[in-house]
Image (tube, rainbow, N blue to C red):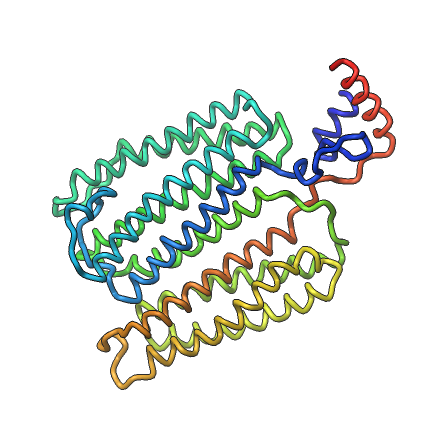
Length: 414
């Protein structure tokens, strides 16, 4: 094995290096995917927030979850079944946004699978691409078969298309894991994570649909699960956007980064629990859920403040600073919105479910939920940024002369 190949294999070499006389931007060598694909990942996350997350919270705030009990529907269903009703329009716009986001995520995952690890793709990645296409085709067939029985009294899970999706997913994951033995592990795990994000988006779409279809059978029990899982799925999309960005050029000292890494993990866990209580307060506001939501809020504020204090005062500040400022602003805004939303929901003389929702109350509750989603996404992004390793490790000094000589010979052959 040549010294240059060994450096590439170990991830210690990220061409081009400045000392070898190249004029290429060093940031480009730290990109796990092409620039356009990272921009598409950012666009997909923003599209998800502005459409699915915002509209989803508005559906809950205006109690429009059952504005139309017909599901599944085509993207153009609203054009031929139009109703001039605010709740109906919000709910169907939310469904249309689901189709748009699903298409954007599918293109993103296919792009990640093809472009990580260099171009052209190796044989294993072509096999994985076949598995991904099979997964997408199976999901489309699953949706089509459900659509054919939307007027039936009972829901029958399409077994053939479900088995097709399962086999395609297993095949894709297997071919992805097989790549660990042929190349650097980092692009392999990025591809597998992208597949996991795609599966999460599929599950979220089905949760939303079955929440409508099964309302008469099981009630609104799926509504909180759909809401919470939607926010987690958005956080996964943000994580994928962060992972496709250029890796940092250097690592902070381990002693400085370790406390920050632990605190980011704790904060993400607390925020997920807090979102669960928040969804239950919105859908089933009993006294236990209210108390747990408030108590967890105190823990979130304390942990976030501690994280920001430790992060900004340590050598890990360059990793913490940009997202840390965003997290601090969202935290202050969330506390304010939480008080207003709480007073609007529980400050009246009637029970929350018996009181008509005003536009102001719906706006406050929606804003409070959206900022909570933003906090979770920011905390996940911060957790990844403080944990991701630098793209260029310290190169073994004994390998430098041999690597430089091999590069020079390669340049002469060209």
